[in-house]
Image (tube, rainbow, N blue to C red; front, side):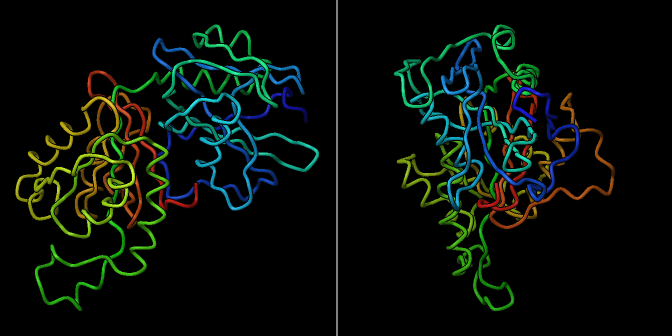
Amino acid sequence: MSEGAGPAVSPFAPDLPGPDRSTADADVLAAGTVLWRPGPLVALVHRPKYDDWSLPKGKLDEGESLSAAAVRETREETGLRSRLGALLGDVRYDVPEGRKLVRYWAAECLDPPEFAENDEVDALRWLAPADAAALLTHDHDKAVVALFAAQGPPRSVLLLVRHAKAGSRNNWDGDDDLRPLSEPGRVQVSQLVPFLARFGPERAATAPPVRCRDTIAPLVADLGLPAPSEEPLLGENGYWETPEAGLARLRELAAQPGVTVLSSQGGVIPDVVGALLGEGDLALGELAPDTVVPSRKASTWVLCLGPGGELRSADYYGTPTTT
């Protein structure tokens, strides 16, 4: 099947995202973005090799994750830096090498909208989503842009991270808030730093335990962010004293324009995410009473909110290396 022959687009909503999104049926993996700037306008690229207008995308390098490939390919084809936001969906179609999967994210452009011709792309246009759909060559690209248009760009994004692995609670005699990360936990932190950086956080916050603070400290240092605010209401001890106050504080953090990263605990994250998922117009369906909201150690929920604080998308990454 050629690229324009009508492959399926599989958005992750309305189902609650699971810890992993299978790529087992794909022989070729690729990733791309709907690159946007205020308007909103989206970027389309013209590839002279195929004489088509498409979204920036490309195949993974050896050992590369899908999210890393999406950011890299967008930079290579457009010359522009970006930060990822909501997952939009997968496209699957046949190529000579077998079954191909392309995963798409919405991505905010971080540079002035300038373009220089390169080896792969000889033109770039910024268009409103409806005009972009009219120009795009392939139906599956049009479907991905339609998913972006239906959701709209976020006003704010919260990266809600569960701390990395710490030493055993049973083997720790001191204050549990002082229990440090373990060696496997420090490995997870080294993986979290580049993963979270792809979402472009501008500020950081942390629950009181040392293991929460140390999970994001290298990211804060690498990006030159201000010192994280400490959030007692979003640690397990403070949250369960007054859950309503904790959820209200999370909403305040999440509503800050731009991107905020918050490191918290497994006794808090499922409750606050479940509360957000169970309300509003987000098409994730009604949560059953026994739904378990996943929150593995070193996992991340990417929560995108609209101008009224409404949750527009919620994507779960069980590990920082699988997507």
